[in-house]
Every structure is written in C-alpha cells, then in structure tokens.
Length: 248
Length: 258
Image (cartoon, rainbow over all chains, first blue to last red; front, side, top):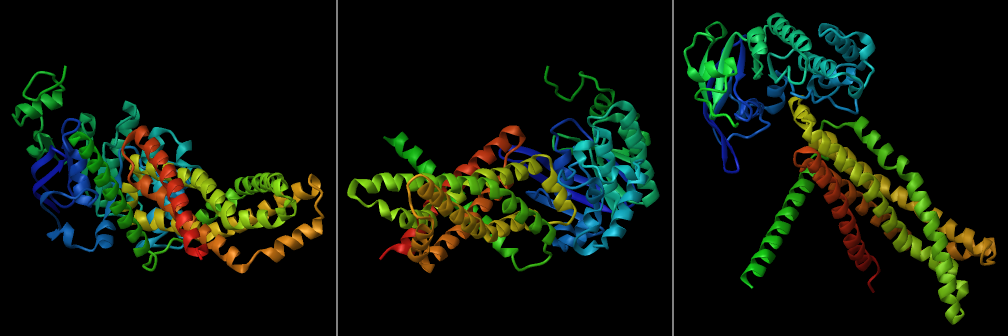
C-alpha cells in the first residue's frame, strides 16, 4: 500500500502541494482527478523520487521511500508517461524490454525480445511493430508501447499519467479498457492521474480529487456522483459555475 | 554607479554559480567511471557517432587549412626570402595549434550541438524521467559514455586531422609552389618532435572531454519547450568553443613555455 502524509512541494513562490494526505490500498486502482496545474503529476513524481518533496512522508508497504535502496524500490514500479516518453533512438521492442536488457533484471537478449513481443501482443500490437521506431507509430500505438513498457517487468505498482490525453475517444476507450484489464489481471496497485472522466469511470476503484494543493475528497468510484462535494460535482460535470475558479 | 555594480555583481555571482554547477556535474560524471553498471553498447555508439562520423568534416577542414597555411607561409616567407620553411611551419602550425583547435571547434559544432539537442529533447519529452523510473541513472547511461568516448576518440581525430592538414600543405606546396615531394615530407618528419605530437594529442583529449561535457551539461539543464532546447544547444556550443580556446591557451602555456 502507498501512504502519503502531509506532502508539500513548492516551485519558486508557487506552492503546488500544500499537505497532501492519501492512502492507496494494495491491489486497488486509485484515480487522482483535478484541474490542470493542480500538482497531480508532481504528486506521482514525488512518490517515484523524480521530484524531491519539501516536506511530508511517503511510505510504500510501510517503508519510507527516501530510506530504501533506489534500484530495488524502482524495480517494483512501472510508469506510463503522458507523452509516452519512448526512447527515439531505440526500436519498439528495445523500448519495451529496456529494463530486461540492463541492470538487475537483465535477461538474455532473445528472451528479452520474446517478452517484449508478448507484452506488445498483450496491448494489442503485432510482432511486426517490434522493429519499428517510435517516430513511425501513431499516438495511440505509442501509448500502447508505453503501456507495454510499463508492465514488461511485472511491476507491483503502476502509475499512469494522463493515459488518454491526445487520443480520439475510441482509442481512449481502448486504452482505458486495457489499463483496467491489466491492473486486474496483474493484481497491481495503480495510481492514475487524469482529468478525463471516461478514464475515471473505466479505471477507478477509488477516486481522489486534488484541489488547491490538497486532497479535497476521496472515496469509492461508485460514490463519486453522489458524494455531495460541490468541487467534485463541478469538476465531474465540467461546469464553469461553482466553487472552482475558472479563467474566462 | 550602484546599478552598474549591482549588474556586475549579479553577473559574477551567476557565472560562479554556473561554474560550480559544471564542477559538480563533472564530479558526478567521474564518480560513475568506476562504479557498475556500465553500458558498453552506448559507449560503442558514442565512439561511432563522435569519432567515425566526424571524419569527413575533420578531414575536409584540415585539408583546406593545411593548403591555405602553405600558401600563406610561402607568401609571407617570401618577404624575407624564407619560402623554404613552408614544410616546417605547416607541420608545426598544424600539429601544435591548428589541428587540435580546429578539430576541437568542429567537434563543438557537430557533436556538442547534437548531444545537447538530443539530451535536451529527451528531457522535455520526459525520456530522462522514464530512464530513472526504469532504474537507469541518466548520468551513467547518457553522460558517461559520451564524455568517455569523446575524450578517447578526439586524439585519434586530431592525429588524422594533423596528417591530412600536412598533406594539404604538401599538395599545395608540390603542385603550386614547386617543392620537391620527397624533400617536403623529409623536412616535415625531421622537424617534428615527439613532444609536438604528444601535446597535440593531449590537447585533443582535453578538447573532446570539454566538448562532450558541455553538450551533456546543457542538455541535462535544459528548460521546457522548443525554446529550452534551442537555448541549451546554443549555450552548449558557445561554452564548448570558449572553453576549448581557453584550454588551448593554458595547455600551450603549460607545454611550450620556456
């Protein structure tokens, strides 16, 4: 399980996280919603150590993330980045098998390639894509490759940063379904950052809303529509009128 | 007056801070030199990109410079009846100064810019973050192979540049200026000392190190967006060129001051 307590982080004079408290039970799919620039991505980057928090604690299975060996810690994680973040200079299969070709999880090259092709198949891509380069793929295919890379080493915890951004509604639906299936099938703990409500409904077991640097509301996905919080209500209905300030 | 002093102070502090960051970056790069894991494939790719693919530009630069140098020395030497020194001056000019400096500047233009743009793009597209999440240290995976490859391959490029530059001089001297081909080469070989060649190769190694280090540093420090990538690339090339010229002065002082 992941437990975040009193997490704070500022960039210059702008305080992005103002004391985030969040608990993600093991094997659950938590979706964090919130407007653009509310610090959702910063939150998961803090958990991964990509951004150093100013204050607060983050524990994974009771262990403080700042006091565990980095390699072993990161080996438990997979992440799908917003833009895919595929390595341009490597063919698709080497992107997927990146972790299996080097470091502590290293496997023989033919075995790593076979695993990569299997993971590509799992996300709906044929073996013919294995030797293509990321620049040769469409946006949807890049997301799928990113997803395959995130699950290649069978991680226990997977993060998805805006998994459907930039995709058409049909492809977004396909990616949402894939994420839900994979998380269920692997029994992984997942945190998804999104402001796409179709993703929330397809992926979430639990939902947390981040607003003004704090968790405004958290609860089961089934209670999202009836939670009674005016901020959540405004967000999920996409209404310009309500307590959340909008620029017009 | 106060405003002027404040601006001067701000610039000085900014420069010192940048030097400090570069020193820390250099220390971190060296820190990875002996600690596994190593990435031989990335190192081999960097050797190929920095070394082999730079040969055409290095060769052409050296060839034309050697030829022009021969013409200049012949024309200048004629003012005091010293036309015969062309082979010696071309050799010493190419090996001690022009070879390493021009190859260094060519590498700054070709390799530093490419490294900075590549790493900066990786940074703005979150590929650097992706490396970290895949348990791979970007300094070890991206910086060390490039810096090491440039440091090792630059002496080879300088040696090739020196030979081609001397041959450029030889071509012009024998085809245009009436020098005897064998005599020209004999004069060149007799005149050059081992110390000249050693200092040339050492300069090459230092310039290669600086060129790759600046590319990596500015790439890693890039800000967001296309403008960030552009700034990183420009900053890397300017810094590498200035540092190469400054290092050339210091090394020349160290190698050749009486």
